[in-house]
Image (cartoon, rainbow, N blue to C red):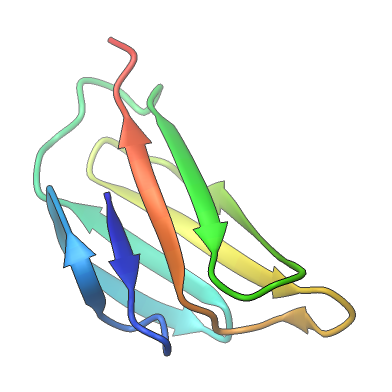
Length: 88
């Protein structure tokens, strides 16, 4: 789990996460510090900007990707909070 910086390129707080990479505008790859048993884990995303949303995709046992959008403006680089939940 963690909270990214305003630019979404670093951490204000993080746990069990080794890195975050901004791969394109509003698109990130987060690398986990532990290997999950499978890619069947849950991730919650909460962008810090009002009227914004984030989506998770491309989950593997060690990484997942996030894309953030702002209402009326499309993809945007935003800070966000996230949590990973292992169901296994």
